[in-house]
Length: 242
Length: 297
Image (cartoon, rainbow over all chains, first blue to last red; front, side):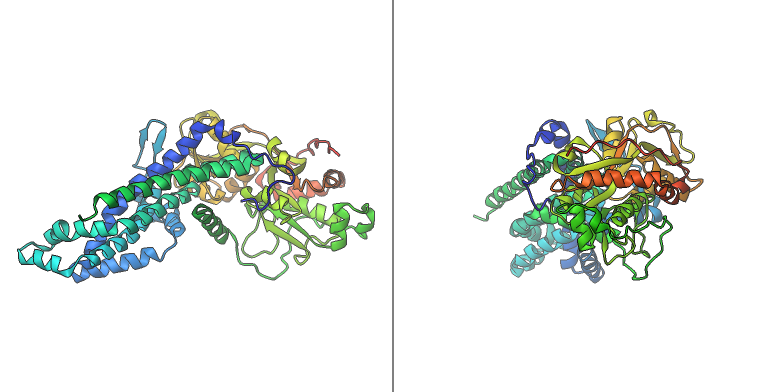
């Protein structure tokens, strides 16, 4: 952003945003949709990965470890690039042209799907590690007791270990999800006109109001992140073991 | 703020992807040889910015690196090529600085987002980066010109049914995120799809994910020529972009110098030569020099 404000006097108004509130909210709508869909997919995939990594099957353990190492060490932009430019050339399905959903003013097409794929695959690696930390926090005796009453691995995980692990994982999971919320901004340069994409449009059209536009969009993110952290605090309180 | 960091990461990644390694060989560009003014410093009045720059013998110019025909830098060359760059060279040469000497002239990449900030904080002295003149921009920076008027068209697959901008209503149309072109297609009823660079949009048109891409006709013609038989440019120009030279508002005296220098370059044929060497191959005729806006002071 501009390194210097003021001379010559720069209008720091936000009329660019106020006059286009519909576009502003639609852009943040895309941000929220990207976040929600990716969060659900990442949580599911991350939980499965965590189960693989703590499970008894060594092939799955190796796969889980390899996935986390590979994906967590790859910049998100590279994963986006792969899904936009690489994957479609290898597998035609990965062009996601079969996705064509329209809800109200929102269009969920190829670009939205590719962004969701990149975001959820990337975030799943971090979710996996947050949950694994939670699993490690569950006393070993819990799993042993569950096995002693004859539960198979699936039962041990789903009924004894994971419910406790999730509780212990809420704070790191919230951080991961907040990071995901902000990572959605990368989709702005990969075909989805979400908040940052729209902000770039505004600053291009209203060069004299850059400061106001930036503040307006930053505030939008602050509000969304606050909502996520508030929910996590509530959840943490509710799930606190009495 | 984490948000600025996210932005910075995107910007850095974008830069890393678009910045190419610089070789140190002095690549010869195929533009016209611009004559460097002798003893230029004495021809400017004391206290003007032009005099300061001529005395210092160095200048930073902001150009695009990713627009074939206007401002484009490939991995192998030190100096970008394109019509904007040629115009920059004309201006630099009139200050008595050799425009092909990269130790004296720095061609800084300015993406659309940082053209105004770079001028305001003095990172660059001039911006020639397909810089459309608008009232909003003139609030914060100086813009002299226009030296070129272009319009926006559509680039579609060779077998596409799209014939004009009316046909893209409700279709997805690609352009660079945050560009005026993207706003214009949105205003025409198309669904905007924004990417970081034009080349990514071209990919998306080639593989059929989007039905068209849109930006200045000159740029599209370059891509159509690159992919002859697969892509074509259709429709009339449906917008008018007046491309000008950006300078800092701290130095209003630069405006008249820019206008005079470019007018002179048009009169002596350098303009035509520069145009033919850069945009000519895409099949565009040399335009008349547009009537430039009067400088205020």
